[in-house]
View 1 (cartoon, rainbow, N blue to C red):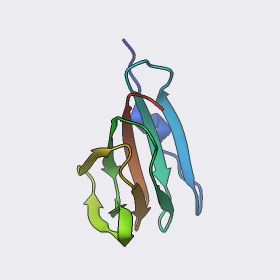
View 2: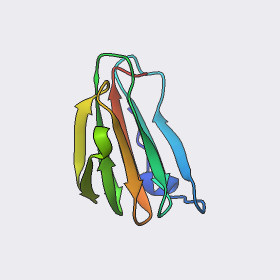
View 3: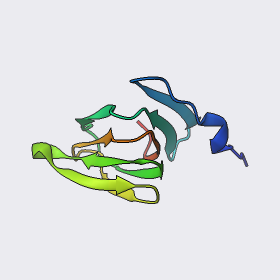
View 4: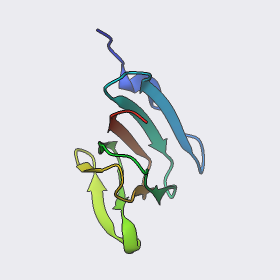
Length: 106
């Protein structure tokens, strides 16, 4: 077992996104913590793979992004679940912390 204190990864840098790998090289899933400064966009993208992902908002507010300029309001406690192939991204309106789970890992 492993315990990760998410508060230890609460770091922001002006105008950018910081990424912390919490679970790496697992054959079953990967968990990544992203911290976006206010106004930062994690661009819409997709992966040519089968699998699923979740994006959980730990802190802050913004929008989940999708294809065709789709936006869904996102706040602390919200979780987006999608296929890895489905276009996805995030735009932060405040400092925003995300926990992304990818299964199987990419």
